[in-house]
Length: 423
Image (cartoon, rainbow, N blue to C red):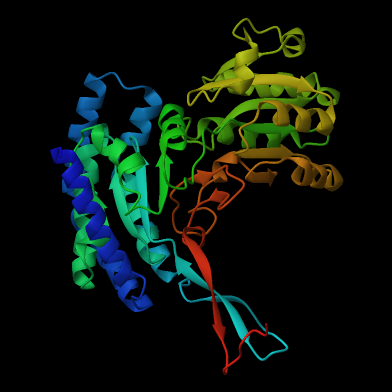
């Protein structure tokens, strides 16, 4: 039996034991742990940033991409955001024990559908050390034990953040097994979580690049909540306000290019060209964004900086200051393009026409659809969830931002007075 196998088995047993206790924990106890962890994040900010600086140095030496470096980097604002996220999760309603439906049968049986935790949740993630805080806190509030396996590139940062979560658990007298960080960078640990821990892990959540998520979805022996990629679109309609469209587009694409909610394709209503197309593309180019456009756009805009788009560009999550641009035949053309090339993540329409907007919102089959708002609002914190484990593009069990409520299941509680079922 390998050392990694034994390590992961021990982690699994501790998680199962902790989950049994956590499922029955009072809301006040869980909130005490979250608030104490938030205080620890602030108190140890210097240590967290020092650990992150060491991770960043190693990542640069390893020549990680700009998108991964952006996800990895912490600063005072991002540490503060983690602390605030924990405090926001603490004030959320506790879903556990909540009755979502109840009714009585003619025979006198009283039936309730009651929210319960999923159990033990394994989270496998790359680069983003903030996932350590977000995932640990969301699992705690929803009564689930968490097994966190971060990437080796963020190992020091994740360990420093995890220490703050342990401080919170200790303050609330909850077992350390409630939130465990896998203490090895050995890739065999991931293999164990995928195939060797069915007796312990109830659900897996991957958060990282396409290859990681694809591997988890292909090899996992337990249910998976995840998404493959965020190929997000902004559609600018003929009835769009030009200034609003420009502002939303630049924010959607360039606020942070390495997040999954960043826009990767701009679709422009052919009826709005050429003036609107020229204005939007000039704004992108002047902001330092590479533009890859179809023949229609290039015919309208003579700027030599515009590159020719390929078929693959429509399917690509660039995670960089690059955007693909295409003319489409109105809202129907936009809907058809998204259906053909999108990843069911996040799409936005910019228009002053309410009927057109409602058509887009109803017919686009993505986890998040927006009207006159940036795609970068695809975030659990922005949805009022405090934080998220990720944006799910699944059609079940959860879709969109995965927060506290999405990390629960339910059971039926039936109360009788001696009823038996007749033969």
